[in-house]
Amino acid sequence: MNEVTARTDANPEKIWLASYPPTVPAEIPPLQHHSLGELFEDSCARYADRLAFSSMGKSLTFRQLEAESRKIAAWLQAQGFAKGDRIAVMLPNILQNPVIVYGILRVGLVVVNVNPLYTPRELEYQLKDSGAKAIFVLENFARTVEQALPNTGIRHVVVATMGDMLGLKGHIVNLVVRRVKKLVPAWSLPAAKNFKQVIAEGARSAMSPVEVSAEDIAFLQYTGGTTGVSKGAILTHSNLLANKEQMAMWLETAFLSKPRPDQLQFLCALPLYHIFALTVNSLMGVATGSHNILIANPRDIPAFVKELQKYRIHIFPGLNTLFNALMNNQDFQKLDFSALLLVFGGGMSVQRPVAERWLKMTGCPITEGYGLSETSPVATANRLDTKEFTGMIGLPISSTEVSIRDDDGRDVELGDVGEICIRGPQVMAGYWNRPDETAKVMTPDGYFRTGDMGYMDRQGYTKIVDRKKDMILVSGFNVYPNEVEEVVATHPGVLECAAIGVPDEHSGEAVKLFVVKKDPNLTEADLKAHCAANLTNYKRPRFIEFRTELPKSNVGKILRRELRG
Image 1 (spheres, helix red, strand yellow):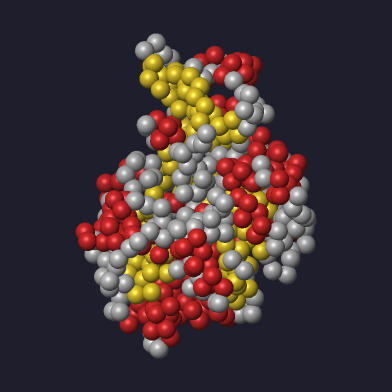
Image 2 (image 1 turned 90 degrees about the vertical axis):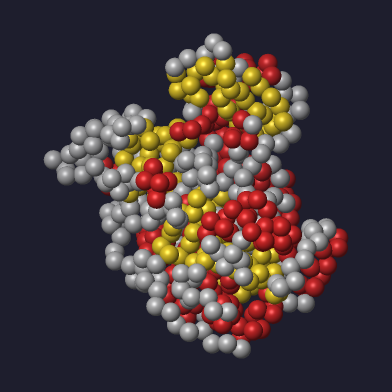
């Protein structure tokens, strides 16, 4: 009997290997680099004259990226920062972001990624929790830093502007941002330095080599995680190098049946401070000598589409909400999609109606994968030769194991729903200064408990049914919001929707639906009839509320917790 398939249902050891593409091995080889800095320097030397990042019409080659990041590294060392010190980065997708992040990594410092849209309270908490000693921030958000600063250990503040790296055009960009769009609230940070000043000072200093090992910390990636309070996932250099290797092996399968372009062009619309874009765009882009087109504000769909008109994009990582918003733009519908090779969906479930419409419009399927900040992020992915939307999150990638477990930590039968647990070299070292929280999510045998509920089929593919905490219990029956939302999204009058559980004296909980209309004539009765035809009684929304928009996270993920109030 084939060793791969000779498994019991209760303990399906690596049954997914039988479904692997033939060229992908079960395990990744030993890592070629000891650190992300070493990988970065090798790539910059190998691809020196290629474009690395572009933003607002300005580009950096790998040679320029290396030179500018070296100045940041040298400046940090000149300020007395030593290996292991935490440096916060509060920037959107602009050229300064990779320059600063790789400068920090090259000298053994730790990047603390910060969402620029944080409130002063949220920023203060993260800076204090991480023990960050310096912060790089865009002037648009300097007011937030000013308000948070007094109660933190921050010693140095560096303020960047949108136009810093755009040459002469930068003066115009800054004028528009400050005076026309009024996007820079008044701020006062007397001791702060500006980005250009830091670059100039760094150019006069030398970067001293620092020995960085694979097990040293590279990032503190903050996440609400599976248990509520924001925590810093400790991601080591080896975590991210392993995930890069895992993705690279998977990516190569895309070119078995398609010609590989001389240089891949990635669209980077997701924020670089988020783990998805950090690894899939920035790290993979650098490792493969690819060109990343940075989109600073993807919520401005008309401006976003204008940028898309300038480039032939090969690889597009995105979220369901972003794909949906783009397809509702008439200019997007007119774009030439012939260069598109891969579209990755992650961060939230991709809805079948969105995926099917996307395939019809672009000719390129959305390939779903799955991961979390705690897994660097990619843990599973669908095969890249799949032409149709599967609704599954795919197979565990090389060197990764997925176990579906019940509340007592036991493997459930194939096809049964349980908590998705992940083990592999990309799984975090733990939560920063939170051994108690780490203990809650790490099992004794080394699996990370994701808090996502799902099942595995006999081919080794996993399907997410929902977040454990989002599950709705109606008269003892489990209702998964994702299923309700997917059914509602098939109605032609619906633009976006979200389902939550609300207290009900008869059934414990009932389903409440929030809907943004695509058709202004859509009624509650229309939706209830649609749900009645497609959902069993206990899954049908009892209450429906129409909204003009739904609350979303920084990456466009619909926030059910805010709808729950």
